[in-house]
Length: 382
Ligand SMILES: [Zn+2]
Image (cartoon, rainbow, N blue to C red; front, side):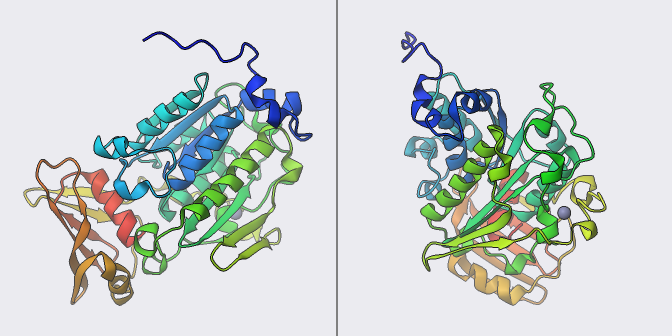
């Protein structure tokens, strides 16, 4: 195939409307072009944020996601198409190709991986900031730990139902370390403008049975888009050197009830924070996250959460009631998920889920640890 002719010889031409903004200008646009951003999780938040950042002119995007595109993603995950569903493409690869089609000079890589304590530092070493597009708290707390340790800005976001939350974390640092690209991250914000971290505001991840997920409670595509737009905007502000304009609160929205709020978090008790106060990186230092072990000969995978949980199985049963027929049996809850099947299996394979009161689960009908982890994150929580 012949290469398409360039649209314009001036590389800044396509950003004309953005360069007109007094907060950006040509200087800001060049800074955006020199920047690198990591997007962790490329579902609804990650797709929308990555697309905004690619179109805004970010030089390099690194996208990490462990899942494949499914039909029920298309309602809100804006980078994907029906063709991606038919071919069962990994999201990281489908997103990479779509973003390249939007902007041919974008440097973008897609990593089909689960972010964990063994690889997170490598991803952070090469980027200026991180956008959170995750769907589980376990990985979020790991990412918060890693960003605070490395002094990398972390743009937290989450959405479920018709609501969303976001906050910008500028870690407290003694001295900014240079990224692997040689740039000291001190160009993004001054030490004095550090903010509380995720654990200052939410000291512990929510208990599993209490946390709604998009798969159990539903989610409005416009709620995810709104949070992603906020995250991308905060990223752009930081990249152009306008850290003084970031929102220093915890911002929340409920689009259905027309509620918007920004809660002041400056007084969050930072010195008591295990993460940014004591610098005890509990999630980062644990040898790995939740374990997924293939149970030999049983066509099943056991998923064990990183920390022992005391699960309320009745609450879990009502959360799962619209996703299959579940029954309580002593210390466990068992049932068949109506809308899951192992994409790698040759035959239609029914997925059975057994949840124990200690937070463990067995996913039957697959031998793929990543698929089982995904089922766990979607239905049990994470
Ligand atoms: Zn903290």
